[in-house]
Every structure is written in structure tokens, then in C-alpha cells.
Length: 408
Image 1 (tube, one colour):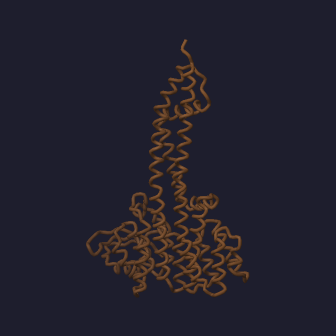
Image 2: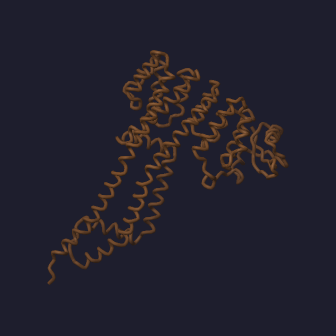
């Protein structure tokens, strides 16, 4: 495939400068004409030039693509495919109706690649910043099994559920975060203004300060004398923490940590039970062989513990065993889910059993999230009480000492 830089005008007369990937110049012109573009110039460029100023995609300045937008895109695409519209035409139609500039450019590139002969999963793989590995892998399996529209519907439902869970979590975290923010401001004011005044009083009193007071005054001196550096350091730490949490390695490590924390363990385990069971049900209904679907699901997993679960399932199938044996003493699938899987294997209804598991544990996941969030607020209040108690102890002990000193 070759890259071409082109200049054209669309049906409304708007001038467009962009690049396109095609087999040759005639193929590129054909694709652009099908889009309704009037090409005024087109030049072949080296693939390495794709890093020039016209191709830089500074995500920080682009409008963010929401989970809701991706879910809507998948639903509309599945409906159009089910109605008999071919994939390239469906993508072109969705590209014209998209308002988000960044997502519009993404869909346009998907259409270009599909029109040029690439599979949909291959086209999606060039936009892993928007479509995750799970989506790409499931689309690839859906294309192979001829059930792309069903896969897209399931992926859209999965995206909407993740969006709902995120909204639920963010809504529940709003009050604790506001409380934490206000408490942080109050602590900074206390440490930067109030405590130094007490330190002056203690110095004039000429008493021996206890250890908590010495620690408090030392911290206060740092905040009062280097407040700007303290704020900058805290902001940088928060940004780095958020950045790390958004990376694949960061998310994997956080998931592994959550499997060891009592309050979060149930949430993480149930999330992966739902994710694996949904995928199993979908692909079994599509008629995908068990080993192939396990391999596809394994390729979507990046967190070590659930990935090991799927790998073990695949190994047992390769050896002629069954899923129930593979899941014995498994850290992810609970015993009830294992019994349902065993029943599905005996009765030959594994697709419906995995669907029942996904539905049931989706409800359990919501309950586990509510339980975990209900513990957060009391923990936060206890932490604040400990900090305030330490400050009061450090301030009032010297004051009590001074009150018993008789003036000479």
C-alpha cells in the first residue's frame, strides 16, 4: 500500500487537505471520487512522512471520543449491516453523520481501508487508541464466523455497560472527592498559616516540645516556606499517577492489586467473570470451535490472573479435558459458575449457560461496586479524623504544658 497526499473539495465546497492509503494513484482517486470529493492535486509520499505536521494527532487538543459515541457507532453499524448495507457504504454513511472531528477522521480512515480491501478488524487495528484489543479481536472472530452484526451488538452492549458502571462509580465518588479536596485546602491553610503562629507562641514559652509537635512544626515550615514547590510537586504526582493508571501496564498492575484487596477483590473477579462469560456465550452461539474462541479470548486478556484462567481452559481442551476440571480452585470463577459450566457441558447448552452466568454476575458486579463504594466514605472520614487528631494532639499538648507554668 502507498500513501498519497491530496487536496480536494467536498460536495459543500469545503477544501480538504489530507492523506490516503491505496494500492496506486488510480485507486486513491477512485476512493476519493466515491466519497464525492473533487480532487485538485494528489502526490505520492513516503510512509515515513506520515509524521509530518498535517498528520500529527494531538489528542489533548482534540475533542474526546466518549464510550457512548463508540457504543452508538457499533449499534448503528450492526443495524446497517443486518439491513443488507455493505460495510464500506455503512462506514461512509456513519462518517458523514459524525460530528466529532477526531472520530469522523477515524471512521473516514476505516472506510478507506475497508474500501481498499482490508478486513474491518485489520482497519480497526490501526486505531487501537480508540478501539481496544477486545473489540478488535471479537470483530476478527465475528468476521471469520460470519456473525459480525451479532458481535457488534454485543460489543455495543458491553460498551454501554462499562459506561454505566463508570457513571455509577464517578457519581458515588463525587462527594468523597469534594470532601478530600476541601480537607486538603484546610490542611494546607492550617500548616501554612495557623501552625507557624502556634510555633511562635511555643518558642516564646520556652518549653520542651514533644515529638508530635516537632514533626508538625517541621512539616509546617516546609509548607510555609516552600508552598509553591509543594503545590507543584503534588500536582505533578497526581498527573503522573493518572497517566500511569491510564497505561496498559498501569491498569494491569492495578487490577492485579485489586484482586488482593478484600473490598475490591469481589468487584474485579466478577468483572472478569462477566467479560469472559459474555465472550464465550457470543462465540459459542456463532458456532466458533471451543479452542479457537478460547484462543481469541486469551489474546484480548492483558491482566495476568484472568489470562492464566483462559490459558488453563485452553490447555485442558487441548488435552481432551473439560472446562469444569480446568476451573477447579480457579481464582476468578466462583464455585456456582463452575457448576453451571459443568451442567452446560453435560447437557450441551454451554452457550446459554455462559449467558446466564454473564447476566447473573453482571447484577452481582453492580452490588459489589455499591458495597465497595459504601466503604470508601467511612474510610476517608477515619483518615481525616486521624490527621486532625494528630494536629490537635501536637498543638494542645504544649498548650497544656504552658498553662501549668507559673509566671515568676
